[in-house]
Image (cartoon, one colour):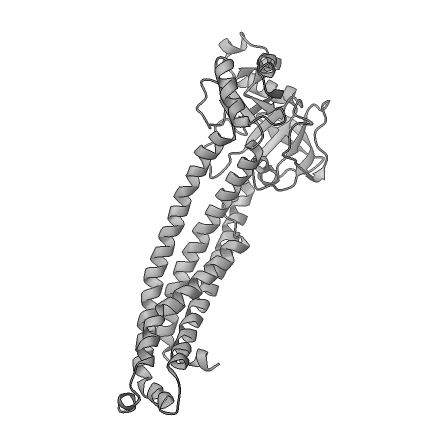
Length: 387
C-alpha cells in the first residue's frame, strides 16, 4: 500500500505517466493481435502444404490462388512422374464474383475429386453435422468463419453463386484457410465454374474436365520440394510449387507485421519510458528529505534502489494491465462487428498478453533505474538539509 501511496502523491502526474504506457501497450496489443492472426494463418498454410505439391496452369503466378482452369485429364500425366504416389484435382473459386480484397484468406468455394482420401494428412473435424460423401449433390460443408457470414446452420440452405445448397456440416475452427471456405462436391463446383466462363471457352471444354489445381502427393521418402522441380521439368504448361515456395512467399509477408510491432514497441518505449523517467526523477527530488532520513537510520543503497524500482515497476504494471485490457476489449469488439462478414482480424494469444504485460513492467523498471540510482547516491547530510 505504501508503494501505491507514494506513486499517487501527485495523482495527475501519476495518471498521465500510466496513461502514456497504456497507449503504447494498447497499440502493441492491437497490432500484435493482428500479426498473431496472420502468423497463425501462415503456420496453418505451412502445415497444409508441408507434404504435397500444388500444380496449376502455367499462366497462374507462383504462390497465387489459382482460378485459371486446368484439365482433370492431366492427372494420369502427373501420376506418371517418378515419385508421385497420387494426384487429386480440385476447383477453387471466390465465394462472390465481385468479391474485393480482404485481410487474410478470402472467402471461397472449393470441391475435390476425393482422390486425396488416404493421402491427405491435414485433417478437418466437424463442429456439427457430417462431412461430404462422394455421392452428395447440392450439399455443402461450411467453415467456421464463413458460416457466420452466411448464417449457415445444419439442415438449412445457403446460396452460392445463384444456386441453393443444403448445409450438412460445419467444420471446427482451424485458424487456417478452411475457416473461410465452403466445400461442395466436385461436380457441383465444376458446374459453378463452368457457368462463369465466357461462352467461347464453354464451347471448348466440358464441365467434368474443369479444375483449377491438381495436388500431387509424394511417395514415401520423396522430398516434395524436389518432386515439384521434377514435375515442373517433366510436365509442360504447369506451375508446380512445393512447400518451400509457399514458405518463401507468404512468410515474408509476416516480416511487415513484425516490423510494425517492433516500431510500436519503440514508440511506446520512447513515450512511456520518458514519462516514467520524468515521474520518478521528480519523485526523488520531492522526497529528498525522506531519503536522507532513511539513509541516516541505516537504509542501504540496495534498499533505496529497490524502493524506487518497485514503484517504477508498479507504474509499468498498471499501465500494462490497462493497455492490455483496452486492447483486448477493442479486439473482441471489432471481431464481433466483423463476424457477420466472416472476417476475424484479431487474435489475442496468451503469448501476446503476457509479452505485452512483461514489456510494460520491464519498461517501467528500466526507466526507473537511473532515478533510483540517483536517490541511492544522495548524501544523508545534504538530503536532510534539502528544502
